[in-house]
Length: 160
Image (cartoon, rainbow, N blue to C red; front, side):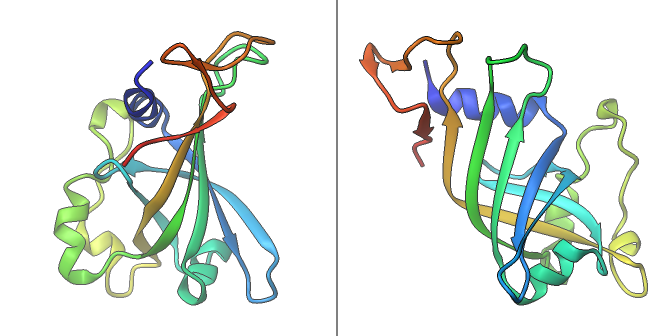
């Protein structure tokens, strides 16, 4: 199995990720966000500036995220895990990011214009950049994880 291809497939097939942030006291917060991929290790989403996770990112850029396929049967988990940093997309990078966000109209998302995420608008576009990625080893329940004919950990690092 090509782990990088499996990771890309998970990202392409799923519309939401669970974003993990931390507040000033170190308390974790998780929230689902509709996202669009931008490059192999970048994830874009729009959030209100007063949302808990947006306020957390303004002070602490570290994030974790999970993209998982909730349509598979129990014990057939398919997921991508990541850690990295995230921030509001800078104005001078907004046009490039808006070329990727939202996903194509066939996924049902409405268009986002620069005016929707700048100035007095209550929303901003954010980008997470993953420093490390892993996938849950795709296998049948109660079977060992094998990649390229060798035993592997249930959570396998995606090569850069």
